[in-house]
Image 1 (cartoon, rainbow, N blue to C red):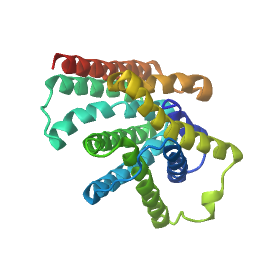
Image 2: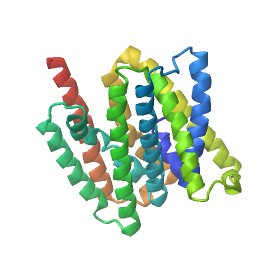
Image 3: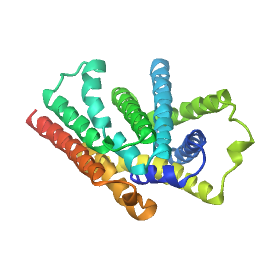
Image 4: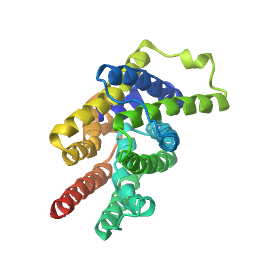
Length: 279
């Protein structure tokens, strides 16, 4: 399901801002139904924690805007590859924001990722380089909300965090559309195909994926689940070949750089697992 999010960014033909607004709307409504039926917590009684959660929700919306903008400017493979650097942004954000110890090993992993990005972008034109920069900023936003959510999760159930983040994300996106003069009849102009893909994105790839991740994590543990999610670039690139035929648009350097970045992301996850075991 995670691997399909990038593919859908190309299959859905409406503007990225409309796409994100619909994704959040559908996810919010379906999540409300899912949490109610599963009797999972939805409230955040503490006002201070509520305000922090709402702030993170706006970062989530910004992440999705830049993620889909990057994909629509270039390819699903590039957008999702940029997103794979999220884990490595976390390595310097955690010491900065959560006062955790800085890791030189993770810093080395970050340098290797930069080298991989050089391979990926070596033959890019101006639009692809712009997509790369937007994609990397999207990954930074993803890292930022991941770090903040990890802190919030110490005091607030994950289901409550996500429910409120989707709610404020919907309000934030509505304000963005209004400020851009896009809150008009164009919002309803879409094909039946776009509507079908949006429902799949909002229900299956967002709400269901979130709820399934929580349930699976109880059985397999956080590391196994996070490693599976870190393999999202692999899923997306493999899906992009038969569905979008992106292999015709990407050269050998792209796949060499992709392999390097994915290998570093997996190595980083394994390294963290070893460190936890030793402790």
